[in-house]
Length: 305
Image 1: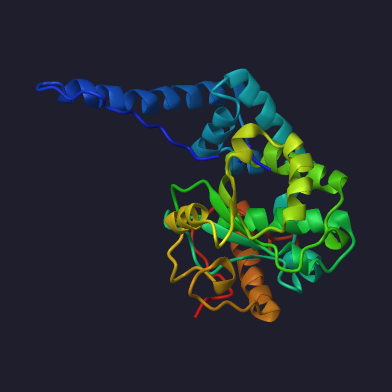
Image 2 (image 1 turned 90 degrees about the vertical axis):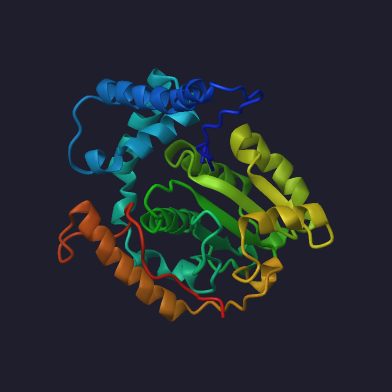
């Protein structure tokens, strides 16, 4: 999945001396100025954009691709152009909820009603509730909800968080390695720097064997964002709670909130978001498919009580 990663420019002052505040202020501004310069370089390299490509290629978007390629403009340009080519054929923004709704009937993947402490959109995954066999449609369902999660990010926030509950998971309902690899490639190649953190809650020990295989295909920056959490491991629990308010966190993730997935309610919310996304992308709701975009604020479900 990633190159999906946290955008952080941190300058650390080791020594503080009198009269040095102006010097430190300039030093603090340098990473920001450098990133703006790189973004402008990438804009120039891409040349004039129009239509959906112009909507997609915001400054935040360009910055994510630059970060994913260690601020190398040529490599970022190549990666972004490949994404634009993929989007022109796969058309993720044209996926409608009713095309993938069957995948969500059991609540195996949905957008949560709460956010993490940084205001990020949260996706909840429950692989033990797998209910279909079409790998292509499973990937389309994930892509749809990735786009939907981005639609619901607050302004200025580029990343999301994942919570994965392994209740009921086994190798019998696990995705094939090839499908896992294809999914990872899409997420890493076309949604770079979108993942802030993924918490895997109480994964069975047997999952570790599967993880060792899958990890080979994951960029090291991304794999570092995957955190295993076990209730008896105090350090892992405290790490997760540093990202989430325990009052919002569902009980299945060690929190205090009760959460129940209602497919009909969630479907209504997705239909509303499809309308919102169609406006973002400039679709005619009557003649063109409607789905995801990149604006803030929509209702979410299910809601913890």
